[in-house]
Image (tube, rainbow, N blue to C red; front, side, top):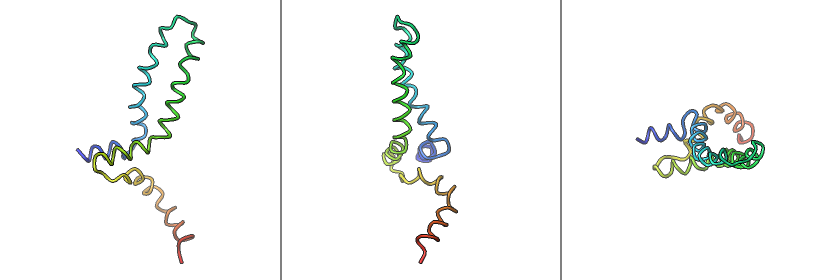
Amino acid sequence: MNDWVANDLAGRHATLRMVVRWAVPVLILMLPFLFVPASWDVRITMALPIPIAYVFFTLALNRVYRRHRLEQHGLDPDLIDKREKERNADLYQEYHRKYRGR
């Protein structure tokens, strides 16, 4: 089970999975706006702040939420940064050589 959780929260496309997962409640929340007896421009104007806020908070808090979920399952929260560190290992080595080396 822990391998599945680690892959789900820190594996490839984890951010996309979280955005899609969080989209379901937002879509359900926006359904009533379809039935408001008004023109489409009024409906869109009423509903537009919801997805704007959704996108902002989803992208801003995604790493924080995934770290929290990893901690809840007893996994290392630094797993989120593992792929990025592997991808940019040469940049980290260059930085340490240039600025941290003695």
